[in-house]
Amino acid sequence: MQAKLTLVGAGPGDAELITLKGIKALQKADVVLYDALANHSLLEYVSENAIVVNVGKRKGQHSYAQFEINQMIVEYALKFGHVVRLKGGDPFVFGRGYEELEYARVFGIETEVIPGISSSVGVAGANQIPITHRDIARSFWVVTGHTSDGLLPDDLKLAAQSSATVVILMGMSKLDEIIAIFSENGKKDTSVAIIQHGTTQKQQSVFGQVNDIQTKVNESGISNPAIIIVGEVVSLHPQYIEAYAESLSF
Image: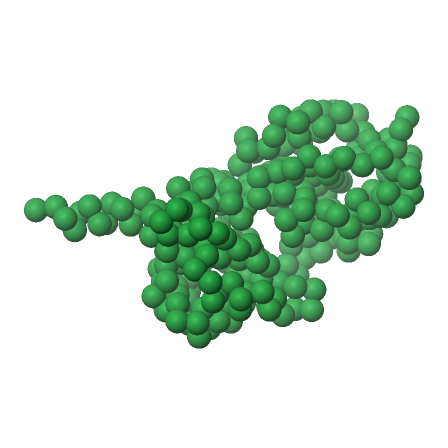
């Protein structure tokens, strides 16, 4: 038996968006510690002899603190062997994956990372919104809306000044502050998409502009977990193209 930790990115929600390598890791796992945002149907790939533990964290509902998860990884790896940490999206995109990797290494545990499709790009792509476009957006920012100190990151203010597409994760609780930042930077008419439970059967979305998106969100009832996309690329979503085509019809 060799102690090992494998971080596996489960993708943005659709179970079929995990990589083949990620599935193979689940099949070989002695222990699986999975997140709330990882599609639970992926556990069907896990051996019936493996230990499976839900360590999911959602806003205001933490079954385990991060330091407890770190300790569990080490304890299970040293006792049972191969631990797979199944994390929603990609382990290194606001997933605290490196913290878990670093902690395991201190105890001499072998580590591996299997990347996943981050919701920051995967959800937009699945909804036919290109986060880059050679004529509209030549770069993009991915920013957290929830830092450890409870404030929005200063980088968001820099992103709002750019012509780039801005994708904000975990930002719904601060949507009013986010809107204010973009408004202050002359972006009141910039297109916005908010997509909840992206790539899953529960997906809901709302589209608008910086100046009216809060009202539309209130009317729709959309909340976390959701991604916020701010940028003119949002206007390339099929519903905008269809509306434009209808406006040209006679």
